[in-house]
Length: 181
Image 1 (cartoon, helix red, strand yellow):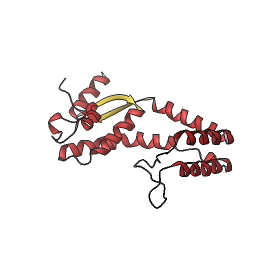
Image 2 (cartoon, rainbow, N blue to C red):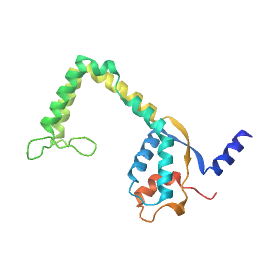
Image 3 (tube, rainbow, N blue to C red):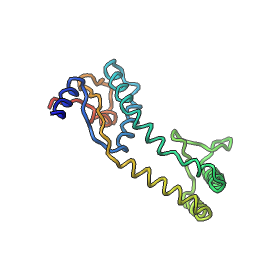
Image 4 (cartoon, helix red, strand yellow):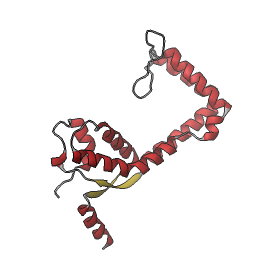
């Protein structure tokens, strides 16, 4: 009985409970972030509502993704990171002034990947304790991202989606489009 009441309530509030992995939530959040240029009050409202709905989950994921303070403050991690950055700087593309070029994700493009990867493998052996902790943390975060989450999304009417949306954007919000069924 309570489940039926929730379904009716959600329908009246233009909401739909959806289950997806936390990784999918992160991707949806990124897609919503890319829709800022779309025009229209209703689509802007729907995007803002869904951002607000996703915010606690996204913040929790970001917090879980942070490296443990003990690791960050360890001398071996500091040395590892210093040498890793020197390796990236030595093998990364630089601009005409000699400054390392970074893309929108703050990543460097590596010139000779084979040489870089050999140097990075050597670095991981030299600081095996740090590499092991980083691997454990990465595995834990990946496991977290594969967990399911239930979210009551604010649904978007197809008629409220602007004509200038592209296929990639539409695909990104497909799960938020209200169906008549």
